[in-house]
Length: 247
Image (cartoon, rainbow, N blue to C red):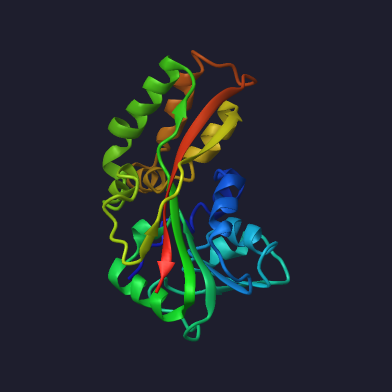
């Protein structure tokens, strides 16, 4: 059974998850040969599907969480449906582009790639990307954050989190790889925005279920020795990608 780690916090996910940089989309789209149909797999709140809908004639977006889809961006040419990544009802040779944002690490790789081969058109592009652990542009705050991520909450991450920490390098890739640049997501956040983002973490939700207490509360309180509630500080997420031709 696929893991659904995000239905519980679907509304927070839609509000606080960071947005992928425009430069990433621009680069991927330079490799696409036709703009008829795209599949955004594990679409979540439809962030990627929303962007693709401005480029492609039709976008098909799937997820295993109905609650995520209930919070997704709507557009006339986006078709949302519940489906596992590894098994869909799409016809063979359907898509010009297949994308996965911050989700491929949850998949059964062999079965998913078989599905990609099946539904991709000849010369289709496949792109999977993710983002790593944020850094805060303040040494003391960043030390506190890294301790929270690694020590306080570390054991509550699912094993698949290691693929994120390894920047997808250990995930197999049965396609003709294309070189891609590195990207980043840079934000100016308040403590409230950082708190909202951390509450989207599957590890935090797992901690809450076990201990009936939110560990984010104490962490945010510790940062109040550095920041006032109204202060704005910089955060950075490294973004990594695997992209290739499906042949």
